[in-house]
Amino acid sequence: MRAAIIDDREDDRAVLFRELDSVLREKGYTVENIDTFTGGEEFLESYEKGKYDLIFFDIYMEGMNGIQAASEVRKSDRDVRLVFVTTSNDFAAESYSLRADYYLLKPFVHDDIVKALTIIDLADYERQRAVTFADGSTCLLHDILYTEYFNHKVIVYLKGARKKKVRASQAAMEKLLCSNEGFMTCTKGMIVNLEYVRRIEDGMIQLEEKKQVPVSRRRMADIRRAHAEYLFRQVRQ
Image 1: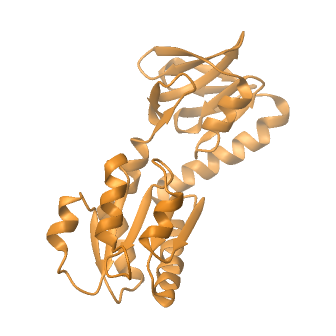
Image 2: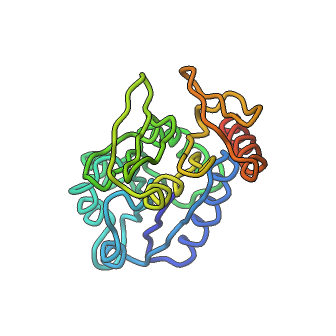
């Protein structure tokens, strides 16, 4: 999970950072990063579409306020989850027009963050996350069963007996997919989505839709451990 907090009050940033990190881990999410910013201008200097899954904007800030900064985000990213943090609901109408996912009132406590993330339903958001391949085509991560590299191309095997070919190196595909939770290289030239693993036995990974892929002996322990941890996180969610 990748999150950003934009608030010009240091104490509020620190509290939200601590509570958000705690709740995300309680819910079983892998926290890749939680970046903090002191204002909208600073945030937008480094922002690009797809960089974050969840963004918290304080509405009342010096300079560019949270509504203005969020409106810039929405120009390019219609899917990222937005949460507005404030001491008043004066900007409620404006925030909802930007498809805000939650409105968090200060001062907040641990249970407020739990409620916010429950309502936002980040699990559903993660299922809708897409990846863009080198040829410009896109694909939902949730649709990928596994990939196989062959002759300078990667065959992406998808749910529903579908597949697509992408001209890319295995290294590039590993960098693209394995940075996302649930994707691992199981043997040379192959990446598997742990979401669809049903059994691991006899040197093979049994997937949904009667698919199977080999797993190398040296990767077996890591795959088993990663799959167990993945299942545990799903149960906690």
